Length: 426
Image 1 (tube, helix red, strand yellow):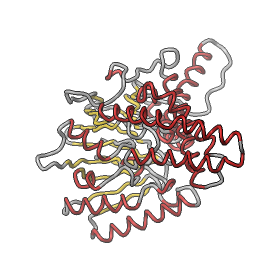
Image 2 (cartoon, rainbow, N blue to C red):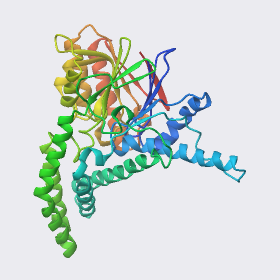
Image 3 (tube, rainbow, N blue to C red):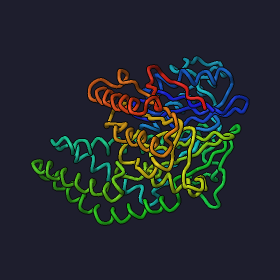
Image 4 (cartoon, one colour):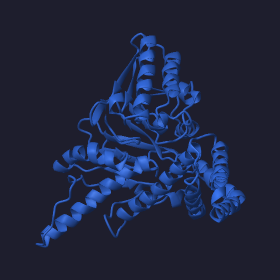
């Protein structure tokens, strides 16, 4: 099995291909749109040139840094279809700017409305109006809240566009067929959900109980706080001098919401509802975690009975969840799930990957499997990270990695991406 790990800005984008002779290609998320244009699309053109398809596009969740590149791919597929149709009709047509993409056999994608159901509309409106008020504050922390909410609102819009693109009226790409077109989540009895080439695909999250919990918590929180936020908005509109105070109070409400969810570094459901999968091809195992939380990952693996008699699981690759954020990774996962390779998709933005997570993974692995040699993969070398704070932060990450390598006496290795992509073969 081969993982091609791309530069994807602050997001995730990987291409998983089956072992020699087995076939099968899975595109895991798409990163940010511009990064997809610059680093992914030209490479995927190779598949199109060989008439090879993407057997599955797996969108872990709707956050912009995961779904934006997928929308770029679908927009390009649509543009090429229009161009080829016009040429066939003998009409003048200009070829699309970006290279032709491979055909897509299926997409796995949980829409925001499917995850939250009746809560979706009120949540979207609440976040939108909150971001407007927060953006007027002069406080940097509050402005950061506004930016996060704006990104989420934009993600919802792009998720809707993805659903429209794959619909019967446009590209007619099958959506969630393994789940009868419904929400992707673990189901009982536990079983393999798909087979691509010789890769068996097990969905380990989200669990139905977690999806319901997210829905119920939002319903309660909305009922308690929507009137308060509406009042604060009216107050801000009525008196410009009160905007700062109103924004601060909205930020406090939203911060409390994060704390209720276990400090999972987001204000809504997308990260908690990440579609997470375990790929198995023969004895090879690859764990793809989206932006999920350690506790949910462990529950999903237990659901599929993937731990050994000692409660441990060793795999060939772990894609470290949520760009190595400290809110999503904990010692429980670090000590129970180990790997020959740990993949970090992050470029220093939002202080990801967190150096404490890098340290935790290294020290925990050495504790539970002291004889192992393992490799850390980072999809941005420090000099490729955006100038300023992200680049400085990636240099800090590199320093922590160097310290861990030195302490391990050669048991830990590391690779930092210095071009559009690199390959990890297992």
